[in-house]
Image 1 (cartoon, rainbow, N blue to C red):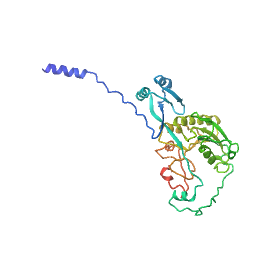
Image 2 (tube, helix red, strand yellow):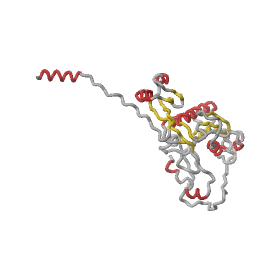
Image 3 (tube, rainbow, N blue to C red):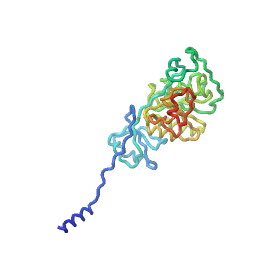
Image 4 (cartoon, rainbow, N blue to C red):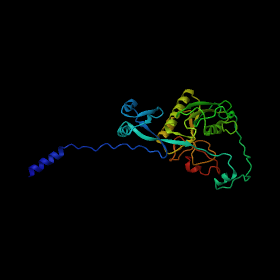
Length: 310
């Protein structure tokens, strides 16, 4: 009896131990409407051709350098292959983002409703504010307006605006108006802060004011290439956002050319934004703390401090 017990024990010890199946990587969900595409970031050193050969019944629609990855219409089988692959850093749903808008020259009542402190100007009919500025501000600087496009022929730009690129299959025009509004705030002769800056339209949003993250990433890649070629001081402004998106945040942080800055308003704050706003973890790309700074005017931006990195 002891002999058989010893034999069984020896067999048990010699039997191979089989590991369980490799757990599949979780697909990062987008909190909002999605396009049906997936964004895939590969680990450094992995060749894309190796991965592309594994994608059955799928179509790669975007192939990037700004992030080491791609996007496409992927079959369920392909998604699961990527989820199990050691070559993949992450897989994320492609989300739809929208423009941010702030009403300017609002009536007294709206202005009063938006803050607790009493308004300094109690004349409900007057628009008596003034703006003192350097009329050479922005000279020699290129501002890339990544938005719905820009009406570049508008007289307010004085020939300083031009079309750069379009992503998403849209016409080369601003049928929404948001991008032109942003560009006017940046460099328009009447309402612009930097009235001598050059404005370059990069259309990534539809005339309805929304667009896919994959097209925004492609737009940022184009901006990076254009700035590298021009070697001019440049700013990219993205007055858009939606749910948190790792791919979009990665694309913004990857554009690290010394002469590029980003202007990204937060959707939670209305008023004067002097530079870059971040520290809002629920919205991309406004959630990027590493690149973004913010500034406020005391008594004007009552909600800013909750999202400021200062």
